[in-house]
Image (tube, rainbow, N blue to C red; front, side, top):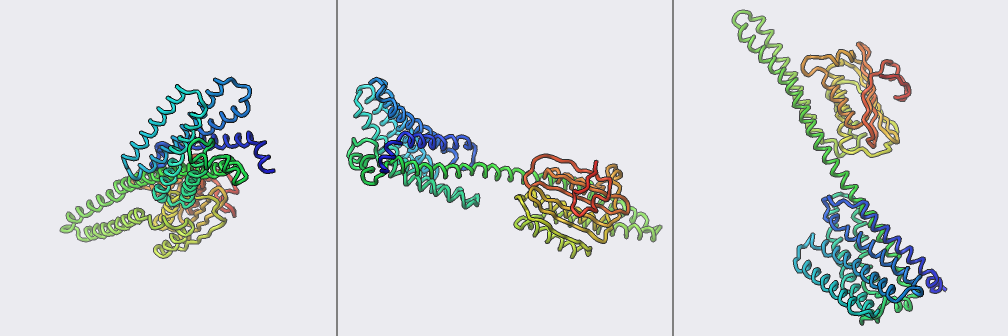
Length: 496
């Protein structure tokens, strides 16, 4: 009953089989990244060519099955010769995939030259047989040879080669990817039997014992059924594996962003050292010169200059320590954002002796990479530092709201506040540069910042950071301070 079903639906099975091959081949070509640092990526195009060539081979078989009674002898010979060329080419691609994967790890010249000799010898033999013989026997003979010479060793070498490359992929620390590569390797090992050993026509001695007919008689199901299941698993693992290129692209982009952020941080600190600390040291130097001039004539004035110089030097020392803390910010990179924020607030309470109210709401609905986390923490540190140094605040409130698409951070203090228009026009070196740094970080994260401040009305900020960065948004000054009295930031609008 089952055998009758498969016999009546052989064309349908072959159509499904063909589509699976095409799907796998085009999936590889669409995701292929030849510029990848992974050695596997350089040779996966051979697997794509194998899939497409084999799909075309099955397509020719379907045409022969449907149109054979209506075709002339020459047309039949041409289609059979085309099918031979397609299947041989497909097996040769698998053969060279295995060779290349192994050579990437073990550069054995004998393997390369042996494979090249076999490929040339088979190609010349096929051309001679097709030119000087019109018998189908020779086509069947070459079909057997291509399977035993290329498919069988090719499947084994490809599986072995993939296993050799597992260590290279392990450095990305994605266990699922390693499992998929191993899964594809096992499928190649299974293909040694299903594809490399079971011939379609019994011509050579091994094929007379193990071929599609003897297999069907032993199992009761046609080989194409098992080959289709085998191909489904192969296609699944291939699609999973080509995702490594997206992963690698993200990994390389993150590394590039990390280097860019590091360069920007160095430039920023260099500017602030030049505009702030160096200028302050220069001012201290002038006071010391005045002290040396006044100490013999106006001792009281000289002592006053010395006391001022000492205070400025202490402030410079504190500023330098702050810069060093920023340079040592990697201590938070291995913890979650919530843990890092909690740790930062705790350290600030201890060092600054200031009341800080910190609360967290919601559940994080997306992924924040290490760059986003570090920028958000740097923004918080800058705001806490401003509250302690400039705002004369007695209390700071921080609320972090984790949503499905974004993170909202609300920071307010009860300090003396400032006039935003005057901040923009500050001419003295280093004046309010911290706000500029904060808004620059928000821009890098493609977030949005809302803020309000006025003399004796404190300072209030609301930052919105998307998990997946989409577009650049600018900072907004809120005219109505009641915006920040809402229970949920963002309920009231009104900014410019």
